[in-house]
Image (cartoon, rainbow, N blue to C red; front, top):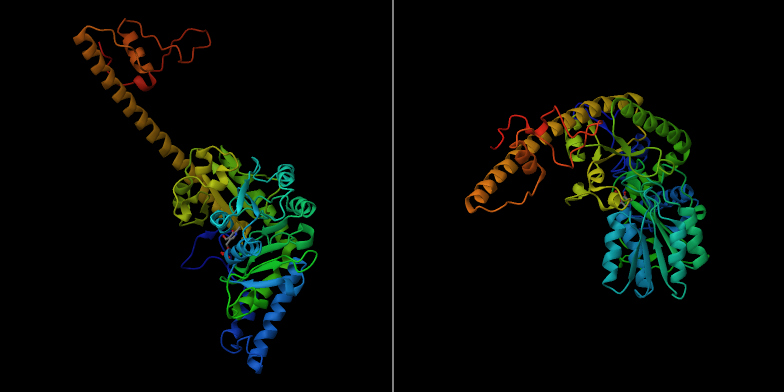
Length: 474
Ligand SMILES: Cc1ncc(COP(=O)(O)O)c(C=O)c1O
């Protein structure tokens, strides 16, 4: 399969946003649109039974990918719905009398829902992340300790960040939750199909996933809900049809569910070789970029990261400008929240403690199943000149801005001097340039004290710098 065609000649490097449907997946889905169109709820005839069997097979496949039991899988419309069902469903089952802890890096489908639950009485706490982008198990342990007198605690920490690809220590988090009697929900939308995700190894009680993140179709996902040891209380949020054992009413999206099942099986088969190849390609990309460019920073932990995922900041290059400059050649995502319609750096990146300028300049580059080494080189060939050119333009703009500032300071100083002379009073120096200019009126130009001294210690310079072309006030 080729990512590039006549309409889309750019290299696609935004596999965290979505992935193309794998041809193998598509092939198995197609008959379920028209030939096997039955409703799995209509068990009274063969078309209904065919559809039901297809859904059962898909459920087994998804369960097998997660090391779960089929009846613990509830199909949904995607991870947004799964996250909503998990958080609201558990909180509602506890009558909203509960504590909810979420990490500072959660996707809006967790963060916004958690915030909404506060209005219903839920006590929300945000777990900070370190500079590596990870929640600290030690800090979580302490927080859970302070809640030991509370009977209902829900913890929601994503497996891998959709912004940085950083992997949280979910096994430790799961073990802590178990020890403290808290329920653990994990949004594994970015990690499923990319690295091993086994609910019992993670210790997840609830786990969200989405088919379109691992080469399945859009509009279909699942929520894993532990059924025993312990059985997780969950109140359905969509009622009426009693599908999915009453947990999620609504006619099932059979072609989508079939596709998700095939995508799960394909992911399981390809996991190891695919992740090894993607790790090689992302390393190659960083090495090549650093060979050609200075100031290339990787945001978030390098050691704990999805193999396909890079979040990079190029010093002095705003993300939006870089993204737009290379768009005809390579499709990447600006790591800021602009994509969601908000202005300013992404809260998820700021949570890492990145300076705003670095968070503002963060781009997300995510490789995938169909990325080739040639694609990586094509992307580098697009990024390097774009970064260099943006930096040159920035420098020119900075110089023009500096000149403009200097001129207006000069203008201001002139006015002040005129006013000062007119009223016969001493004007206090307010900025360096005024001081420097005034000194020069005494003949030998001297520099204000905060200008760096020459190695010999004398504050002199032969470079007129920003004073070039300015006529000094006399
Ligand atoms: C971490 C994470 N959670 C949830 C979602 C929402 O998934 P969906 O598009 O299936 O609703 C996404 C999608 O970007 C995601 O990356």
